[in-house]
Image (cartoon, rainbow, N blue to C red; front, side):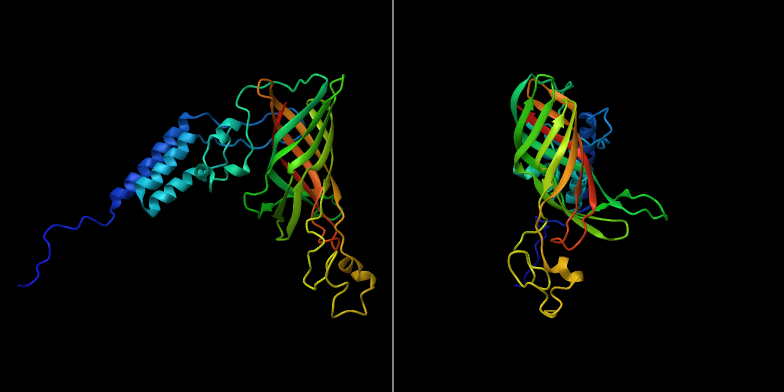
Length: 331
């Protein structure tokens, strides 16, 4: 008896435009939800340091909508619409909101590269005389500029804008240290430990790339409780065991280029042959914009100037200016 195909259609049907409509409906609902949340917040300061731009607020509810969109659409269009919600801007969340997020809610969103903000209307920093400790200190850069020669003859050097080449891994976090306040209200802020350096690379308008180690290692700042500044150490971008393309290193490798043994002591090759991992100096200024006396949270803006990588002493470093937001908890 000949085989006859079934008259009922299979349970699996190809995707239609209905699926795409459903995915973008979810995306539109998420946009409406975003409109009902708090507006973007920014840290305000009356000091000379340039404030960072306002960042859009993302809530836990939005991440739940994002997850629902990815599960409901089951298609590339749904995933694309959901990803666009997250990529709309950086996220400004309080410390408690960050702690309530799961790993999957943070993964791939860039939230791990942001610092907490203070939601309440905090006042000025007012600490009584004594010794305090700070922890959870975070520094989130919002702009990188590099000092370059002027394009005009006889012009002065100026800081020019750059293009960030590093992924979202340049924020310093979990730093801790001590705070000392004297009887006159002057403050001494000392950084001791934490994730206090991050390898970063930026690109100049002409195409030259400038690597540097963004850091505030061993920072000691002095001033009043509204603004304090000081110097910090900038470790070598590379360690002494790093070998250059000719096999030369600081504590290992060849002393000179193998093809030029007779020219090993030449003056023009001295910096190339004699590797140096010496630490350099940078300076930073921190402005306090908000302080919550109940939780001990403090936030503001910062500006630092530090040298770039020297290629183990072979190159003259450039000055890199970093501005952004900072946050800490004092107790």
